[in-house]
Image (tube, rainbow, N blue to C red; front, side):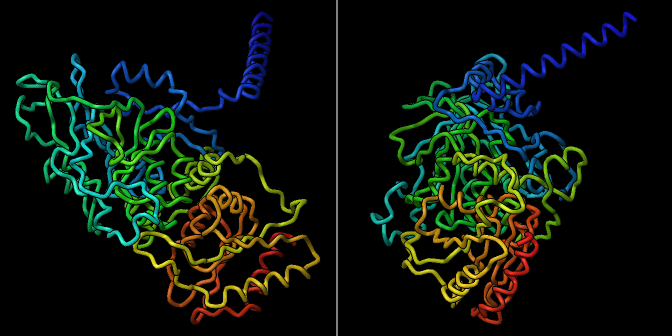
Length: 517
């Protein structure tokens, strides 16, 4: 009898506590920032000062949003080789401690996490100094009109030895077995670079070159004109004006932030000399806490905690173009209940991150028949000035794009089964926030093969994709993204670049039937 009473009391207390927590998280928006993913390998060498700083977030930094598709990034500390988690999540499971912090004196540290699947590393370190004058490249961050004609070689960084430095103790024999004194001590050798920062098919591997430039210096020589206290991502970009390649960079930066267990969104420093590409830079600023260009610092700048994001070329999004990555999109809930090495929710999570960064809700579910009608987004290719070496003209992938759009518009106006809103997706002249809004609100996305379709990473789970593919551009970019997100995907293959409007309408009509429309 006593046990039964105690059990009832415990259950009552549990119910009351759960109700109180519900009220707290419902009416306290600040409580919605999730705690950093717990991962013992990422916290072992944080100093007490760093731990204290992480607990008391700088009000200028942004919290991580609540994402319905989020799964802990240390869910499986050793994912199987070439599994979906190894490709898209935390496959960086081989820790490499190059420089351990001493137990007594404050000094720098550096480590990398290697992914055998991606053949890439995420690296991070503390008390790192950057010398902007030792990085040979253009200033970066200029308006495009100011730098027309500038060569790409001027925008990509060349690192002199000592462009980056890490403070070490001045003892004659420190904890890492490095001799004291001298200014020629390198952090890594060529053997390390060839094994863990492989050049692969990348002609100019800027992250590899950055790590190769790191010199170890004693405390007496470690002077800084500025200290950056908050975690900072160091990112180098190549095709910074191309949406597909930029999305691979976004994804790499996001993964690096999660793998290193950052408790809130980091600052960002571009270690390249590219000019501003306004719509794409808008997303960088939305995703992370702040943005600066390396050459905009006026003197030696020191970072308490710096993270080096791998190149976008080393993400699964790019490697999937040449490797068979047999992964299928699934919901985080299903994978939590039943893990599957051949399924992933990481691209759902990433898409939600982009939408949340712009302030859009990520927890609403589209009904089968929206009251306001189905939005059908036609992604257009437009002429625009992309970069200093661009003539302002884009190559057509669909020679009669306007004819196809007009035919769809006419057919939609006569369609009586349900309301359809045909959206003219002129992305080249739309702010990025509006582009993301159009993607998330679309029931169907149609477009010729082109970088603009990369936006489907932000599409909601029930979105249907129709890609029109000319004979010259039969590449799997968007079929793969749709597969990895679990989106319904259709394609029309052309003999050349001309699409018969009747054929597009026929395919579109069958898609609508699947939407009960």
